[in-house]
Image (cartoon, rainbow, N blue to C red; front, side):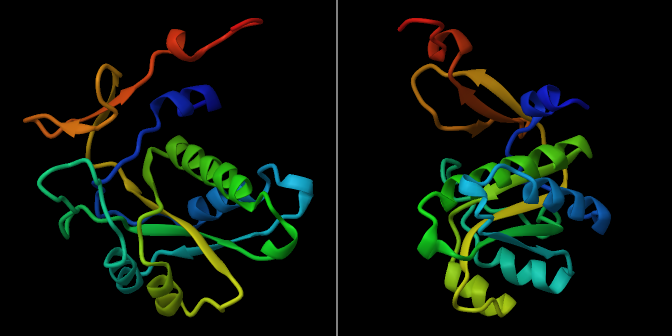
Length: 191
């Protein structure tokens, strides 16, 4: 799968098969993140891979899932992520742009995961202090984001954005995600 195809097919996935991900694939995801652009090449990021079942269960308890889905929804025990990559930040005192670095690194992770047909969901709604406690992450690190990973157990499709950005599931449990059309967001040589 080339990068463009991976960019088009990748969707946030929230239901996963309970099949382990090879550690070498998770390391490839981190390696792609490590080599992502970094403002002033300061490289403030580190990465924490979690793939042990008991630790995954503890991390899962810290996460908030799919805010637009009503009633409140969370993956059941047979749909939960089987791995997480946690993006950590150091050296923030000298780096005003670390959030951009973390965002680009996360994009690289999910694109590499997509190449292996691994679903991903970049999580920002979680208890950062609880994650630090569970994983014994030193105080001088910032837990920026968590990427939930697992082989896909749901289908997600893109819909043209009309009135709302809210995603939804239909009666067949297909996740529909509204996105703006290319012609509505692109400007070439003039506005």
